[in-house]
Length: 268
Image (cartoon, one colour):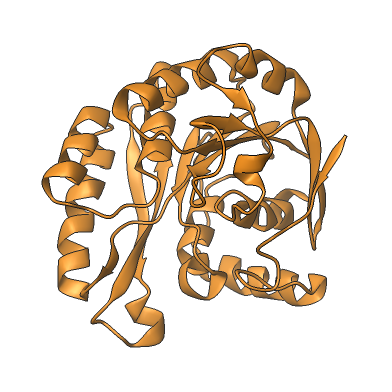
């Protein structure tokens, strides 16, 4: 069994267990409570907690019940590894403890030619790792994960991936897309472009989302993960995507000349 050592601890989030737990408590205390019984999917950001942690907490607080398995999908920032890479059977470590992979689902998914068991794609990747402390704060480590890193974020590939995930999903599971929105444009431009992307997401229209991103040159980091999660949720009869929170890095730094956009979206 492989131990996956955290690479974002101490940079994207606190390395000290008590400080990390305190920071998460602050974030969750500011997020509204939810009365939604079942959330199938979430779209949440993956920047440092200082910048996007509050937005992410809005999403995670929507999970009112402990998930059995969490499918984690995010972009491959390094470009290393296979087009669609699933992490092998392993234990993922964070300052809050250890989370095991769902080995049965990994075996089922990796039997398809679309998905390759590939540790290298995840070795330096933060987009999935930064999601774990939110889940651990809420549910300790009493859930399993299926980590998927997407270098190929084409519409056809990600729709196919979404259908595969839906075929192995169980009613206690949740599917999470790790994605940021517009990168390094001024606040007005980021707000305008992100609004267009979020409108397509609200309609749960993967084709429209892909077209909107291309037509408006939206530098969304993880569109493929969002497409796959929306498609999986559609296959599972979800019919609503709700924007829970939106913000930019400028609201933290005070610099609105070059911001990154973040959103939390719940799919039910």
